[in-house]
Length: 395
Ligand SMILES: Nc1nc2c(ncn2[C@@H]2O[C@H](COP(=O)(O)OP(=O)(O)OP(=O)(O)O)[C@@H](O)[C@H]2O)c(=O)[nH]1
Ligand SMILES: [Mg+2]
Image (cartoon, rainbow, N blue to C red; front, side):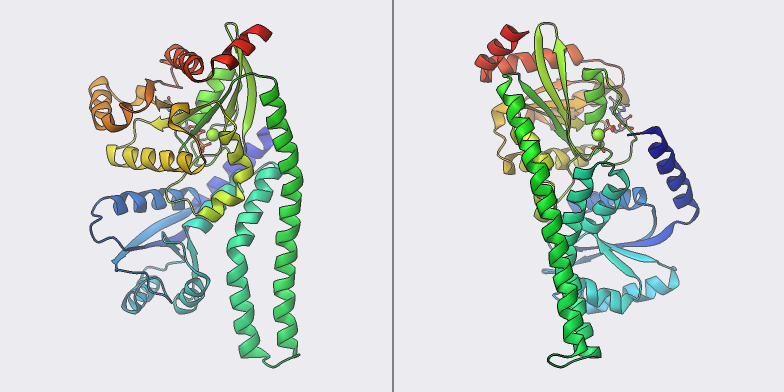
């Protein structure tokens, strides 16, 4: 990322701090037995909202067996939130739940302020980090996919209320909105299709070279890029903001006698919407094509959030078709906590550690990196001995 871009990012952050929009967070909890996880999810939403430049001033959680079909929250809650918006000068309402088009439309009408959900919020953060064409197109596709039914609904309502009638101006405007959106989606998909072919060709070429491909995965902020930088000697951006890395970065390293590709990838998030995963599948393909997947975990996270993130990451990897034998757990940031805390967390993680190989590291101090490389060699030896042979023959 160029320096001038980072400078602009900093100026933007300072500006945001001065004129922060006041946000109300809202969540409908449909599992009555969930007494802790929902709090962690709300905490993550709050963190993301702050990163996106909002000041969170209120949080509303409603327990319902099912989301209300028209408002997500119940009607009584809508009135309660309306009062809060007025009393607390709220500029935006951010839902944890992913809103359907009609829910978003009805809520905006009732609240008379902007209403977004977790999906929109993540895209806002993505937007700030996007600097290359692939990321920008993937974000645009994700946004258009979600916006299409909403814009269609809005155009339909406008048509019925303002200029109804067959072959009227209203009908023309309605079809024109839909046609334009469809055209944009088609154009973005086709541009991404071209880039996908180039990307897949590159993956095939790397595979044909017969060198092992090691991929860094995990939640945003777990330290993937910091580990990538330490392994490669590069200095790719590490900002502390979620989703700093959006598109994969490859680098060929030569360690002792073995050459291998290291890939840095986009971070995972809680409850990722499948449409978002689908839009970013060009980037996620890198994970599928790897020989070893390092799952980076921030061991300094509180235990509840640590377990939730680990479980979510493993589910995402499973959905991508990554098998267990390819995964090494990399417990990063050991410099941030003391030894007894590390031991306690290892005990909590027993269920995972008994299944996966793990290694404790600090990307900050470099501790544990020799162990990490040894574990990578051992796994390659166990799962891809032929690859190891080819790689060392050609170096
Ligand atoms: N103390 C400490 N901080 C670390 C360590 N590794 C990473 N960090 C910090 O954690 C934050 C996130 O690090 P990144 O390397 O950008 O994390 P990432 O997983 O690449 O994040 P995304 O690109 O957003 O997905 C930064 O502020 C880093 O300085 C570590 O071992 N110790
Ligand atoms: Mg990164």
